[in-house]
Length: 198
Image 1 (tube, one colour):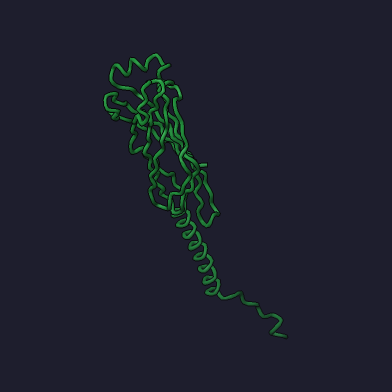
Image 2 (cartoon, one colour; image 1 turned 90 degrees about the vertical axis):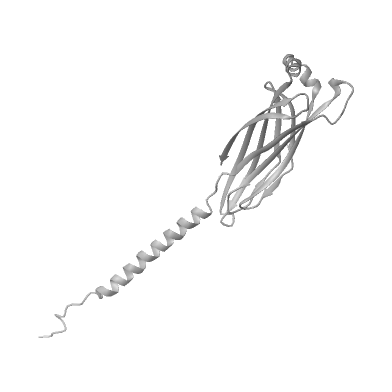
């Protein structure tokens, strides 16, 4: 009788299987951990816009009130918390009085480096003649205080992981400020920010 014909083929060593299984599981865990850290570090976070100050001046010194122009300067900061730079286009600022648009201007485009804050000034010229057509304006001036509203919008884009992940960002800041007529100072202001990631 041939003993080789009845020999049972032995399966691979159990120890070898365990080693392969352990290597496979370790690779999966390491890959998952690396992916998790990468997504956490490079996750696109919403930038923060802050209205530092609003100032109002009359640079023209025109003899006729209707011909004079007021200058509203919005001092704005944008903080970029991301691990990549934020590139933004021209900033848009509008000035409203009692809901009516009385001035608007655009600021230059720029770049906010990773985890840095950039500061920008947006200057808006407001024609006093447009304000004089509002019935409540002279009453507010006589009362010594005029309330104005500003709306600033910044659109940009953040690219992380070498450009593999790109997110559009829109920052909007709406503020109201009370201007003292006597010295053109700001008595108080309140702002509300809105951020959207595309």
